[in-house]
Amino acid sequence: MALRAENATLLPLGEKLGSESMAYSLKSDGETDRGTPGRCLLPILCVVPSAMDKSGIQAGLPFLASDVVIIGSFLLAFKAVLIEGSEVAILSLATVKQLGKNNVLLGVLVGGAASVLILLTVRQIFLLFPEAAIDVGTGAVILYFSYRFLRGFKRYYFGKRSFRTKMEKMEAEVVEKGLEKYGSERPAVLPFSFINALPVFVITLTEGFEASLVLGAAGTFNFEWTVIGALVSITLLIVISAISYDYLIRVPRWGLDLLAGTVLLVFGSFFVISGLQLIFFGGT
Image 1: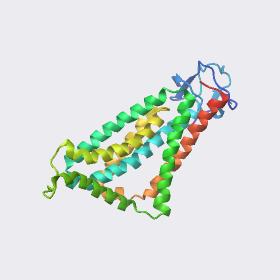
Image 2: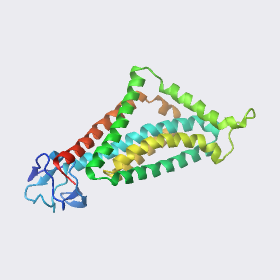
Image 3: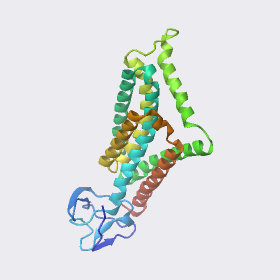
Image 4: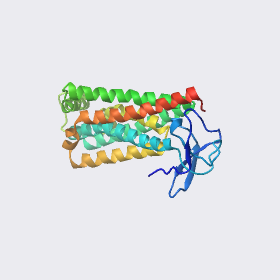
């Protein structure tokens, strides 16, 4: 959606709006929808109609920065779920014959539900802090995972490590954990029980925990688009998994890590700089 800027002025760097300021989102043809008390992420980007009193937005254009937040929330959620979720999908498909379809499904569902609870908890914890602390804190979390993904890119691209080999090793470990309690009389397929679903549950929760931290951080800015990004990514993984396991394992892991690391680096830096501006130039 194009942002029209007729009769608009840019706020000077560091200038803040009054406590009564409200954020707006554009619906169509200039119609606006009043939102929650506004934040001016990167104040230099905030656009305010020149005919309007800066102490209170009553009509007109949205913040330019709000578009960045929407895009950032969507991309952060999409990439985090896609990368962490792809490992869960690969292991689930690779172990379903030995562990049993119902055990794998139960492990994924319970692990996914636990990850959602972690996401909501992380988001609520962040929201307890002042706005500047939220910006810096969530940005720091996002930058940490950016570092991890870029380190993964370096490992797989320059270190010549094989993602397929890593997945095959994890697959063998998951299957062994599920079968070891049966000793020498190992069944062809594990009977259905929560205990037998634990190996997949642990893997799902481990990967889901990492994704939940990124989603919880992104959700403090725009929860709706964070959820949309996560759902789109989950849908994509389900579709690809239903078509072929090979499609998941063939995707160059270094490419996914590079893309995710870059996206997280850009938006993590954006949020950290936003928080620092609020600290040094003022804001609620």
